[in-house]
Length: 198
Image (tube, rainbow, N blue to C red; front, side, top):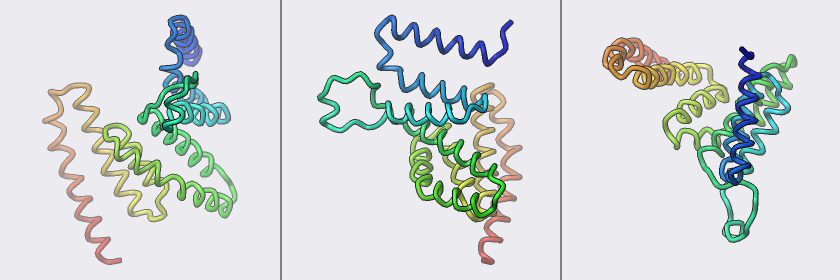
């Protein structure tokens, strides 16, 4: 049996070959590039992951009227893939910024990311589902206020857990929801009390 990274690379290569053979590559190029970015990100190939995220975002970008009328061979518009690729790139850049040893350099990099990142966070939250949770966690990572970051992370942790339980076994959903509500309600009350003091 092959190791998972090699198996994943082979699967992507087969997918690319299949879509090219059947003339579907232009339609799926942005999604395939996003998968390549996720795989590179997981394998800590940061330069390749950044490049793949950028390419996936470009291929799935919103087209102008002029671009729509032209016959081109560079992907097709897909808002979900575009936002997902931009969120992945932001996520990777936040991680790279946090690895900087110099505190002032890290804060300068995070300030740059905060300026452009909030647009991505808002778009993620507007798409709902998985990207809504990703947007909330990214927003917490970009936040300067620790309490806000902790509250958002805690709230969306339970949101993600509920979503996961309902997806895996719908019958366990009603069991999990009451168990998760009590701690969440306690944290919400604590957050409100602390916020009113400042």
